[in-house]
Image (cartoon, rainbow, N blue to C red):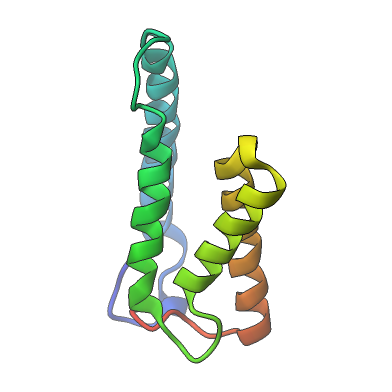
Length: 117
């Protein structure tokens, strides 16, 4: 939720409708994607690039979040390189896992909100 007021003011009844509508939407979309994805023929080329493109877009979006600590794009690049060297056949899964762990560790160490919020 995005609002102008204090986060402590958004509680209870104001939070529940978006929660109850967003989760079924997300779960239904993920299920529909999985079911429709199983219909894609095995010989389709280029579809595997979608997750790579997603990772690139997320990393580029993180450029807006430059702060005094380890920049997010550098963290993303380090995670991708480490995943490529250690687990080349599971690059995306390992890179996403390392990136998530790195972001969580940085958040716990620094404890600041993103610059663009």
